Image (cartoon, rainbow, N blue to C red; front, side):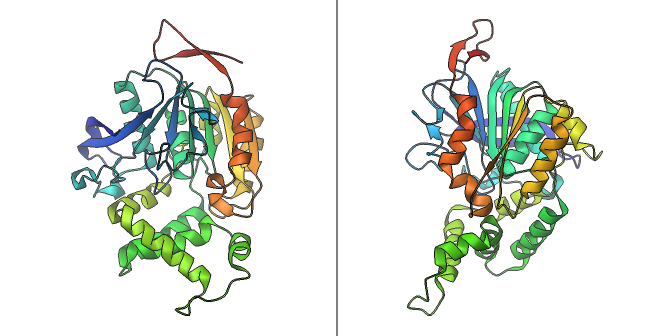
Length: 337
């Protein structure tokens, strides 16, 4: 069930002060009754991560790797993502916000919920980038962070792709559909599309099957997402920077107290795996509790939503634990392996 939360008088990077209203959901035990896991959604995702229509049912739920009988799972809807259906909560001044601003809003919301410590944070794509920003702003908040198919900085390659997305969103006659069609070409990979459509031909309308597949994804997004939300998310991607403008991302990451568990995808054309491996190698020289795992897949960036058995294997050492509450702090927990 959607719950509402407000962060009043928030000042964004551009200096504009406004009330931020957004929503969240809690799955499993109530807050205070179990260790808390924060799940950050991706660009067109939302807080509905598990349940009948949950987009991450393979990972989150009863008896799943993030077990909602053992963990309280918290999922915010990014401010402006439109999931609540209230147009007044969209961020029309989206260019004034950075991903760091969204992280600051989350931290205020976490404080309002009286959460002092999170057992883990996990997120893919922009959700993982947001996780990096949260941990950099509050280095002691998480015992574990698990950024998947993402990075702690916006590369020039990512900015180039987002620029094309922005042009489509602002100039196309069918902006949502066309932008999504373009995005699917770098969310997947040439090998993925060849494996899916290599032996297929044209449908009765004369279109190639791959073209119909792209049309389907474009139309599907039109039905459930809003243009203002897509513009916001696409813009936020380009602002990822845990160094806060200094360019020293490693120093910012090294201050994170909890374990960092990077998961990359070997065929990712959006967040390139070599960037993740470089981060791991350089950061491991100055920080002990860091690891990296690589999803092996032909499916590109979206592999983190497809290769569930690999992902479960990487997450198992983090989430297969016994939990007991810490009586001194109802929102903290003690964990023993």
